[in-house]
Image (cartoon, rainbow, N blue to C red; front, side, top):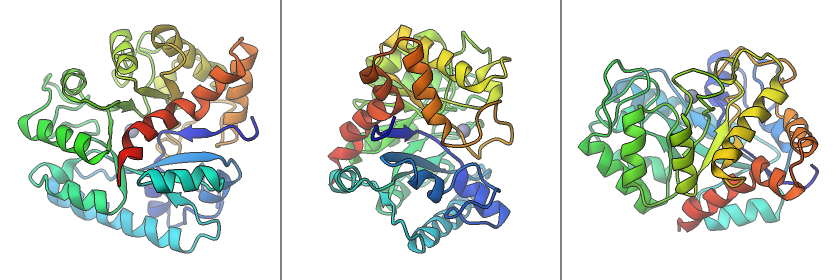
Length: 317
Ligand SMILES: [Zn+2]
């Protein structure tokens, strides 16, 4: 797979490193991935989510601030100088110079509940991807963990339109089913589900049903297959189960809508055969073994995500 671009749509490494008192730069054994291990994968683009489990606007704002500060502090002392992708210029730079690319994402927009103008601040700080909720819903949208079936609120609808305008990627992982359909109807840009699997292969409410998978494909979007065993199913062998989910997505939406969203450092529990980013090589090999052309396998590994990044973030100036 050498020289084939890979893109990982989701990891929680920033929070994991922050909480365990290590850095995101060098391998310490405390995180699944680091900027060092990712640098060995180039060309590679890594979405790095900023997640903090504080679900009110004020606390979330402060929690997120700590993580952003921590991220940029780490980045400034990183020798490999990864590129934070914020627009066409930085995206081109990352690809041309074969440097590690990072897309900063916020998982759960609790800080925006009462303050939509804070989206401009997030944008200026380099955030280019956002999910409206984590499992608990908020005033913007219902979450997958809610007991009711609330969808997108009026503030959430304004947020979606504003993200479309700015060129920020909307991430549908974790939001309620109704919220999912509301956003599909409203957005005029491609969307991603950065780390979600197939409900028909593994019955977990975090996974997407077949209609939802088709809807993401129809929007020219991508679904990043998640490596967490609870979302993969009972089968413990990691690589082949990940590829089963990829195949199901491809069967429903074509080879243009499947991608990868590891969820590294968002779980303690990785399936057998998956320990870090190097497993991407094995996923690629497994796709070829199952009869995928090199072209289609390369799309799944990163080409599809790159297309959406170009479509949405590539329009930023
Ligand atoms: Zn998540």
